[in-house]
Image (tube, rainbow, N blue to C red; front, top):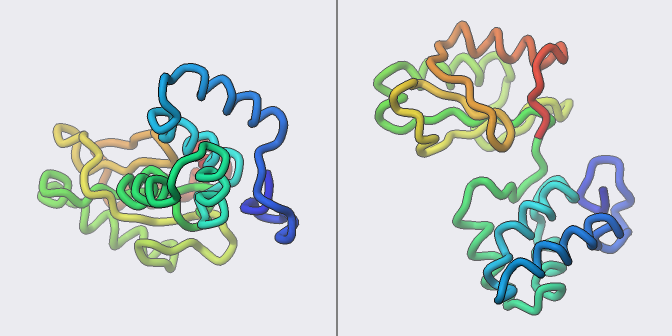
Length: 177
């Protein structure tokens, strides 16, 4: 990982490693216009750098030959692109109506107290990040927590959320971002 990753050299310029650059070229080749490839390229960048910083956005704008405003527009609109460093386990609690009616506020409160962080924050040790999510599309199994970029834990209550955190902290469950 380059500049954005924990422990990386902060003075190193943001640039894809050769393997990631090869993947970037494969992505670009699939789309008739570079702009259409922006979202998969942002996924690649997030995987490589850990998050989409302003330096990464500028790098992608230059690399893709796109206006920086297009990159910023996509990263600021879609919550799946992290605009800050994330913990190893990124927990997103759905707080839309269906989840709230079935206890999401209690789940979020339990996580806040256990992790000693609020939504939008990361634990000091970098193990957990906590966020609210507007809707995770799992209303029939509310409340729901998304771990990382796609694993869902459904029909969870406050006790189950605390058990989940304990299992993740002990490495007994996959939850890597």
